[in-house]
Length: 417
Image 1 (cartoon, rainbow, N blue to C red):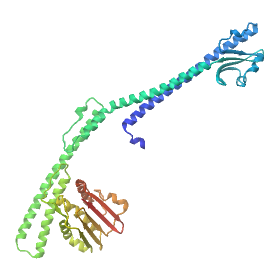
Image 2: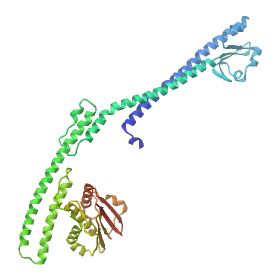
Image 3: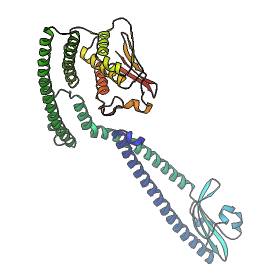
Image 4: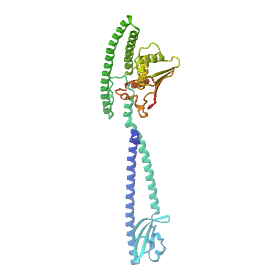
């Protein structure tokens, strides 16, 4: 699992080093095996030939110790008793690299006149030279490893340079850039295929964004027109004498139309990357927003037998569009009302935060992380859009939103400005 998180550079370098290492060690091991076999054959044949010649000389009475080459010794007859046990216990035949104390010998074991005879050749100097060569071979393998590592790093930089270039190019693309194509910059390279695929994706994305922009622009225009007509009709009704109840109803219709216009502006603002401005003449009065929303939901609060506790510290204001603050508080308050029956809703407000706590159903701990997802809702038939919209507003203004809940006890949601 950890290997999957390694960078491409690390994996390519590791593969290169492993290939070089395995190849080098296999080559060195093959050389050593071949060397050992050739050495055993050559020395064995040489010792066997010399043993046969010496026994022939003994048979004809022509043997003289001075005939032996330097480092060679021939033991026969009573001289065999002077040999160490490491030699006398050897079986008949050639024996290569026999250690006797600190010395190394090539030994040929045979018979002369029915008694054991031994021909020894001191190969200590030869073996020391061989060990020196083996040491040099090991040092060579180490050098090969270092050189492979350096060459691998250099090669990887050259190989990954186009990838880094493409990554940097993509990072520099701004959300507002449209009709941008990059495949022409990478023609003739392996990265060109990735760039071409990215261009196809960008082309589809451009068409999608254009469709969304056309829809939102048309929808906002078509919705604003009937709302403006409704507001005009409300103004005509309000200009005529009305009963107190009718006047309150007319005022609520006007406020609902204004809130719908504000909601249209807010959703358009959240749907665009660029800094679209929303009409706002002054910082929003939070206490006034809360009072107005409580008044709008008074009938629902009364029908569900809910008691509302308000704890306002002063008259806090927030430097944010009133429409967005109204949408935020409205969704939190409506959720608290819908999930509370015969209980209490407490609204705490100060200059730094607003907290809405209810004594309703509560939310299971394993569901708390899902409440802000667009498709999640604890209400039957709910869409989950309300809290998702609240989360998007908070993210846009870098507000912090926290939620704490316990089943059967209630839920507390806080927005920290």
